Length: 281
Image (cartoon, rainbow, N blue to C red; front, side, top):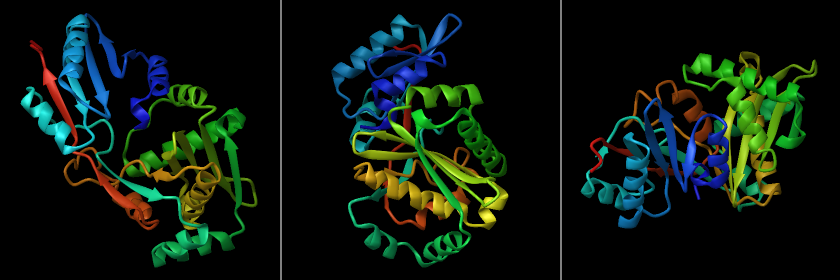
């Protein structure tokens, strides 16, 4: 199941103004609302009837569905939905198979990634891995600063810190934090990973300019892989790479997409999102 189509994700969304009706997420806007339904496992006629009732109940301006496969996309098209150019979730990602041993996994990294990882290991950087529930406020704030700094350089959006901290609280029993620091206890890179079933989601990641010079992000993701395997996860979803179909959404993603591809994995491509506007009848 996708991370965003779970009850716990709905619980997180409720802290930032959304309501859940099953797996439909409703955001009130004055006298109206908008609805999103992200990565449902199945879409049948009965589901669309429930979606229609929900839309009428909440006076939805539109309903947006992010689909899992082409069959779902075709079904929505026949039901009056139109493809749009602004998916809320990355429509292309990389899935790493965590079943191989660490030795085999390491040997399958591309040459440049193995080199960068060796460089980072020679810097004697310190690694900290903690359950989210055991992470201190200072550590979470530090990670957020790294993430925000990365977003400035990459020109992508990060939510306000208060929203980030609410998510960390909701997922305190379902995730972990990795932080990389130097000998002076200056944090260089970090990652927040959330776990759903047997899949670990590389949900947020950030680094400083100094961390990039020391190849700290490579060590950080390697530690994520090790920790996810230790926790029994079978897959690591790298949560998005550059997608030429949606250049506005993924603008500035080329750099970290190359970084992610260096760790291998199988590309997973989703059709995107489909929207139906009022009148909903």
